[in-house]
Amino acid sequence: MPTEYDKLAEWMALDAERKELETRLKELQAKDGPIARLEKQILEQWASDGTKNVSRNGRTVYVRSDFVCSKRSDVSTETVCEVLAAEGFGNIVKLNYNAQSLKSRIKELSEEDQVPASLDRVLNYDTIMRLVAVKSG
Image: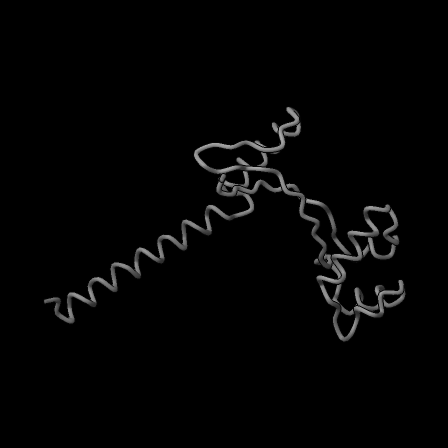
């Protein structure tokens, strides 16, 4: 029968393992980490080859297009809200703005090449290609 010390020793070992895994996960997910580097290389190769997806080992990897939109780091939220209101986005501006509504509207405008220059000065937006893996079935 395990003693309290045995339980504590097991807990300490599991806690140390958890911390190691969290550290490794942060390394893997870093913007310049091994996953990001390989993803960039694969996306470049697939774009060159015209590859859309690949199935291996019971998983399918494909390219997903994600549109992203955020406030520029050198611009205050207040300034963004002022510009948004001036450009007719008052419906999504309160003391702040709704990031998802903004992303959706800027995506629409971007696809039509209609983003006002004033918003270009306060927002970052782009479409980012990402690899996604799902279980093949």
